[in-house]
Amino acid sequence: MEGRRGGSSLGAGGAERGREKGGGGIPWFRMTIPHGKKYDKKWLIKALQDHSPIPFSPLLYSTDGHSVYFYLNDAAAASALRKLSCRITDSEGYKVVVIMTPWVKPPLYQNNLKQEDLELIKRCMSKRFNGSQCCLDLSSIGTDHDLVSHKIEVILNRKSCMQATLRIIEENVPELLCLNLSNNKLFRLTDLADLVKKTPRLKALNLSHNELKSEQELDNLKGLGLVELCLDRNPLCDNFEDQTTYIRAVRKRFPSLLKLDGHVLPPPICFGVDPGTAVPPCKGSFFVSDEISAVIQPFLQQYYSVYDSGHRQQLLDAYHDGACFSLSTDVSRYLLREYQKDNRNMKQVKDSHTRFRLLKRSRLNVVAFINELPKTQHDFASFTIDVNTYTSTLLAFTVNGVFKEVDGSSNDLIRAFTRVFIAVPAPNSGLCVVNDALYLRTATSEEKHRAFATPAPIASSGPVSTLSAFQQQMLSAFSQSSQMNLEWSQKCLQDNAWDFHRAAQIFTELKEQGKIPEVAFIK
Image 1: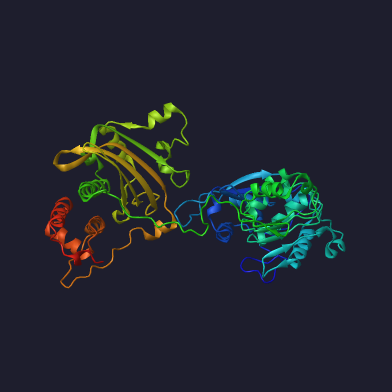
Image 2: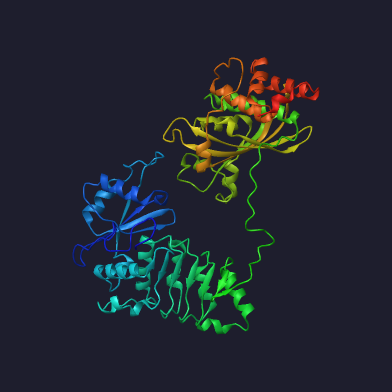
């Protein structure tokens, strides 16, 4: 298509065009890449082609959940690809798995459309594409002169023709905004259901002058974020007693609809929420008071210093004799596979006996289990701490942050965590954990970008000593807790020999006495 931004055109050719290499006796193979959806298509195909000793052209590249697949009708090429399984490493250090399955002819080849016919259909669709508006007009496609003159029948109420059409759209214009399917004698929309995942940005759809008889057909398209829909001149329009009922039935499937059959609709009811309202920014840690902060911050500093040191057995003193611990992960089983055997996520683990077995009890069992987890390095500067409950005898708080594993196959892979501690007072104004619930997930792109960022330089008129990584993390945490700038936070820590707990106590006393100058809080 001319004028379309990005992607390949709808003209002849294409990396996945392919061509059958013989008669019906040649076998087909479906090549599946588990978790392949996360890869860029061009990178994945190029990586496979670069490593394969036998050239190949993937046919009908598509997605299925988190996997991708394509077809080959070359047994030697398929076998060569199968042997590449786990021999290609992605940017995150994971092996690319390739599964080969003998297959009947792919769906697109199970009809009367030949490869040459598909190329002509593609050129016809290219002619009907408006690149400036990203709109494709397939109205009355069956009577198009270019197709009729070549005796090619494109009847969109046939499943094979609709599949071929959607395939061409997916491979060439997945960013399509507007699609016109009027005057095609469509009497069902089941064959159009894949439009939801093949054109996720579609906003306008014209289905007028067809043979749709029931509003239930629209259920096949639920999930499209349509703002404009045309159903005029379909039998289903006569099934409603009034316009209000008609609009309500259509909006039930497409809540964002603003125009129906060319008529502007009243704004949708959104429970009083302004669509333009921005999501409020995330706030920092919540400690309730400076006194509680002065207890939690040093505890976490000491806890994670030991946790990351490789000598986790020293955490015994941090846990109560009757402590409990549980580990849960999100649904990314492949990316968090090291933790799956101990995963107690109750959405995934339904059996009560398994849940009971996965709950670690007593401080000896808890620390023994923690000691077996992959070695880590936590980014203390990423921590957000929220106090949930506090009394004179109990303190519950949640810690969110990121860490990386420092050995094994996942070296330097950034992960995110949420950890809920329930603790009771311990001697020396410390804490003793009675319940520890750790939840792990894959980090977002933003979290990965911000992880382990070097703290900003400390502005000071005097000499500033070089700080270790541990001191930098302690400095950042103390500044966040005290709300003082980095220069004064460092001074307070240095004056107290980098004893976080003592520095926090001195800070609280001086602040209550009004002896800390305002300049200390200017950042």
